Picture 1 (cartoon, rainbow, N blue to C red):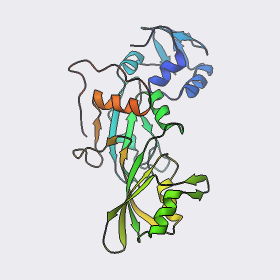
Picture 2 (cartoon, one colour):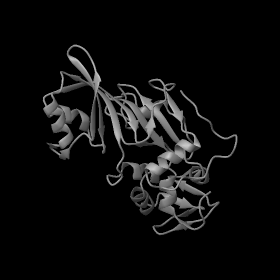
Picture 3 (cartoon, rainbow, N blue to C red):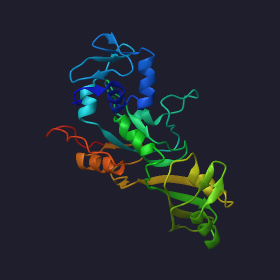
Picture 4 (cartoon, rainbow, N blue to C red):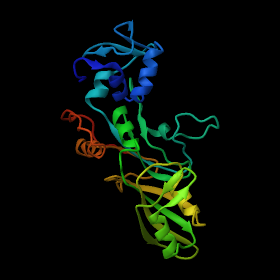
Length: 262
């Protein structure tokens, strides 16, 4: 349930409609109504009000009371945008449909990168997890053409100057392999575009397989196959909020949603 007398942009952001700054812009454009009246910046709302965005009613109370988080095992060949001019498949295509709220992707994975991707209906949570000030380990399994020398691996740990600043692996572990391809587990602390691939390229090595296997303390369950999703349980949701240094939401009622894979 929405706390009494709360800022409208905060309520909309928590409902998964975007960041607070984005919601302030939407409100200032006159696209939001509260109980039939066009809302303005600075408006506060209480429990039970009827909120509409672009004429469509929003189920704000449900979104605020029970934020949801999905873990999706992304396959190759899917984009992380909702729509693509080229008609390519989106990660959102396989997710369960929502009414009055939307799934927000916590970060992105490249078109050809596979593995763990989180989605939530809580915009505040998504924004906090993605903010540069929030330090969260992201672990990847990568197959590299060739083998890295000890000097290369040390350089990647110490840091490499890329076009958008200094980058490094927080950890590198040998994952084995035979022949020309070799596997490595690597950990980065931020989510810059193609960061893992670019770090390896700085050493003259190419990544030909890349899978995210961990985000903070969240791993892909073995039962969640490629292209499937599972909904996190209340204790797992609390763990994600803890990673973002945010208070955990209220638990879902007994007999409510469960874990699902698709």
